[in-house]
Amino acid sequence: MRIAINGMFWAEPHVGSGQYLHNLIQQYAVMDSHDKFVLVLPRFKTVPKPRLRGIQSVMMPTPFDRTNHNLAKVWFEQIALLQVAHKVRAEVLHVPYFGPPLRAGLPTVVSVLDLIPVLLPEYRGGRLVRSYMRLAAAGSKRAQMVIAISQQTKQDVINHLRIQAERVAVTYLAAGPTYHPQAPEAVLAVRDRFRIPGPYIYYIGGFDVRKNVALLIRAFAALLQSRPQSIQLVLAGRPAGSDPVLFPDIHQVILDTGVAANVLLLGSVTEAENAALMSGCTAFVAPSQYEGFGLSPLYAMACGAPVIASATTSIGEVVAAGGRLVDPTDQAAWTVALAEVTTDNVYAQHLRQSGLERAAAFNWRTTAEQTLGVYHTMV
Image 1 (cartoon, rainbow, N blue to C red):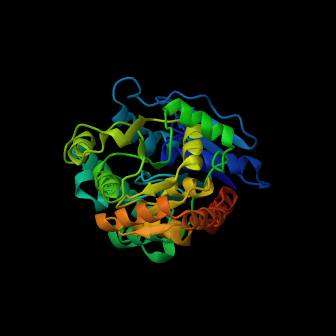
Image 2: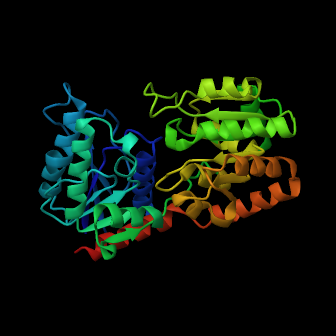
């Protein structure tokens, strides 16, 4: 079978959609499969073609590559991608993110990593974003199959896109090879680099409102008030945007709660640094109110960190018995969880072991095999 795959996010391996695409393609390249894969790449996102066994790469331009990347993206998804798929006589088209063509002309599967702009009004943006979301929803309804990355996301697809359950398959994501307990030397080096002298609670992710970082900071402040201890809250991730509705002023929350001396903002970190920070932390926290899957807590469990995570949506589904699950709206419960995990060494060690066992249940080989299975049901 010949499968054409939309490579829009190949140039962005550090975002969720890019990680998903990279790990699938890398697995396809080493699997013993008779299938042929054509990765279609947009020229306006400059990136070297991958050199992988069994993966043919085609770079496609659009008329808007130098003038308007929004239009270039839509043209690529709706026209250029299909030109290649039909030219190579693909039997299946896979769009591994929420952006399928409206009329593909061949069996199509779309992967839905989350439905954040559909479910959360503050993420819908302006008129252009809303129009794009309607186009993506319409294309998904026309697709032969939809792949969701969690049972929660599958229910969101069924309930909000009105797609029949039998057309929605679930394939979980996994942690990549970088994420495993790091050597003490690597942990010490990253602590020295970022000047983290003692125990720390670690968070990595965005700072938009659904990430719930403001509640985390307030819970941390209450922890310090109830039982003063020399522990830091280390926050990693890209800087927040300027929209006050979408991005709470985290710096102001830090000042208002009086914890500035105990909070360290790292900005962006590399994958290697992230794995070392996860391996060395006293607790890893994932307080988000909504995720399509929840890769960060999975990475943290794979690194042997004691994980405290939201009990709701897919995060609770992924972490399950591998961590401490807490209501993301209950600040007091977060303070209690932080206190127990950071002071009870026996409990923390239990969470470390439980997390490692839970993370081992997810692997990219299984994800790739299940995805291939979806392709084969379509022809």
